[in-house]
Length: 210
Image (cartoon, rainbow, N blue to C red; front, side):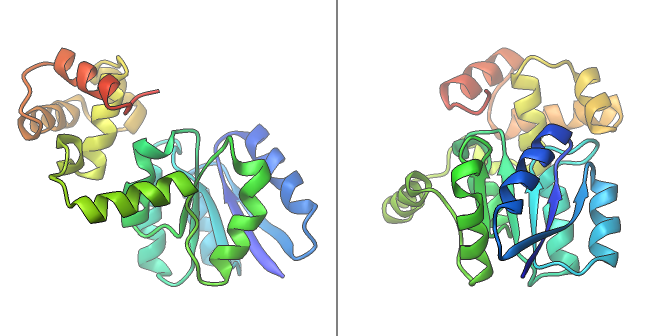
């Protein structure tokens, strides 16, 4: 039996995932979490084979949670499930140690298949993402500006580009306004921009915001 933990802050999504897994004879759900704290409470007391992790959790980013999970149990695979399109987060989570990346739109058809592939030691990515990764390796092109950002900087950049104020970003990430302002300054410097308007335009052009 493949023992699975689900981490997603939306009860409706968790219910849908549970229904998908209940139909599979070789899988069993051993726990579910709605935030980062619950994730680590579960993983430290429960035996499991794989975690299905939402990239967006209250208080902490899914990438931070992913890195901590891989630090504690480096050999246990994590499948990242996200509402965000692949070109916004997939490469980052794979570099952070995820065994796969899946959008919530494809989950009903692909979830069980992805879990089995990962448990066998493989990686799960869509065909389009696999082609993009192969193309990037072949062309060896210079990295676009947003790929020079750290994971936290990237997250803050996306939130600012989506129209949120520094105060709103600080509240959502449970950080101080001063800290977010520092991130904003660093982001603009790294991307060689001078204003939020430039960030917004860049993010829209590169499909980094929904």
